Image 1 (cartoon, rainbow, N blue to C red):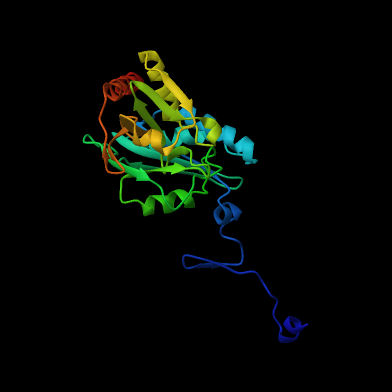
Image 2: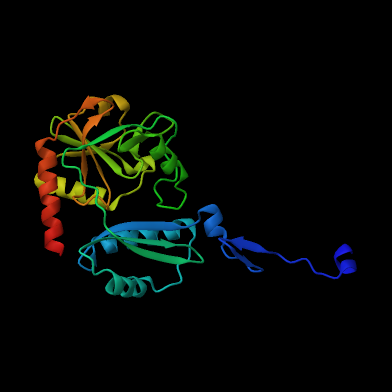
Length: 265
């Protein structure tokens, strides 16, 4: 045995950001993206729709076999109580079999009164595990880098539109609100669900289904939703160089979402 002859024993060694250790400094959660995360908007020490986000994460954890060992409710509440005193903040949690991670950052905002530009994602298809908000986010990041616009719209391999690179998608035609259905393996967005409920309460007809590029291009208006969009949605003023309108339905949805937020704080 060569190691025995020269008087040393082979050991596993690891390096991370200047630290060398004989024990693993990371784990397979880092190497393979086997973790879940949630990002949320907070105001004055309170995270909006926290329970909805936690419940979605717990359901996903059961689905993919992640065993969350922490008392996350207690840990989250203590963390927010101590560090969430800011007027506005972003709160993120990430969980795996080995780690429970949280951070709070000052909120930088995603408002656009004049609307945003958007386009189709051309090089990449929708993540087929998109219904789970996991750390396997490479496709979304690369798609976002591809874009010259603020946001992009994925299609799947059948040419059906699915969702944005960081959001859920809605469009309006003749006063009817359309959105891709969950059977397309899109993320069941918390804000997506809230917008659908608000639409129903306002008498705006909502149709979930399978739609194509032509449907989006011929729409009257469109918008994206996610939890870090301060007003719940960002309307699109231009899509694929086609001008879009901010229709009365979008104005109504913004107003009701604002009212909902104010009632929560």
